[in-house]
Image (cartoon, rainbow, N blue to C red; front, side, top):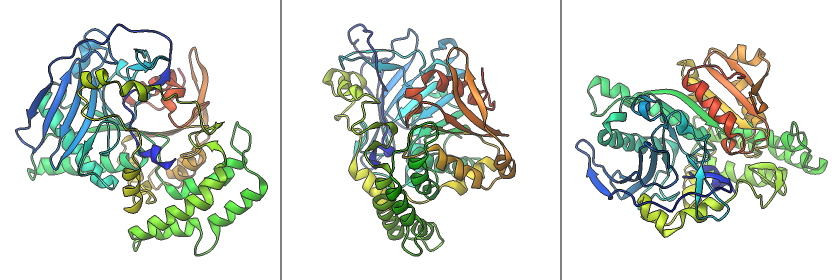
Length: 459
């Protein structure tokens, strides 16, 4: 159940009814070694899979960063083809906003007109190793290790495709991206500084904005929110009994061995991995699971098994002709229990990234933290709680601020937002964990506003 929060998904998760022409033959697969790093690229360009808009440049395949680590990526240039080389660059680690949707036959796709490459160059990466099409003998066991690997991947890509180098990066993530995002930006900033000092070689990668959707950022705030969210989910019906509510609340707050005390110990200066691992076990068994009951943790409007998002994309990606066309070398694997267990045992899962996020907000980086209002696992109530506690120059203003309605022309009311300077907290209506799947029109508009460095607003 938890493993899905760590995964990456290459295609849009949806089901439509249109058809596309038969698969086209891709360009010849190429292998190119880096001149600067111990890396190489094995790529296919313009495969004709998923994106069929004339003039759009696509690249898919692997970045081999050494040590047997092969990361699959899929790049789509902006559909504004005449401006693609100058368009913003979005790095995304899920797939619900991609260029196509899988049809009910699970063998064909249709164009997604709300794809994020309508306005930006978008690169999707399957990581860590063991998710998606990525494969290898080694892997990252925590967010810091993952940051260093993504940095090397981007250096290799921009060295090969230098026309895109120097574009401002919009780092957009979902779920466990609440951990990845702050770590990645912090690491990129430190590497850029070393490049300026001449300590290391490479090209600076400037992050202009951070978008975190359904982010697992502060575990204590999320675990603390579960019983109240289950008892009083704003806009939805309760799904927890009074007896279970009382039981879970006790498990949260009991002195010494309760969930919140264990999380506090994990995040203390003396916190070691085993403290964090035990905190995960206690908090999940005695808080997360009983408060959830039989609901889908990614969309409380459904009981398990949930029909949404549909799983047809997994069957589509398992087709041998599709895998050959995009340069995939292994079968598609959405969730990896081994990957998840490694992050749990390393203590990464239960450590907070709120201080790092606050530091980035203090630097005046453009930040959007947004949640679907039907998401349980990373729910907006917990997100709002930690946003109010985050230490940064706008803390007092944020705590005093009220939500403002957000409306999209032709769609209606899609959410409510609190904007304070460069930081926006957004609750999106009628959306589960994968917000862009449920509210694709609104999500594209929010991306446009972030690119323009605007506060989230109605249009």
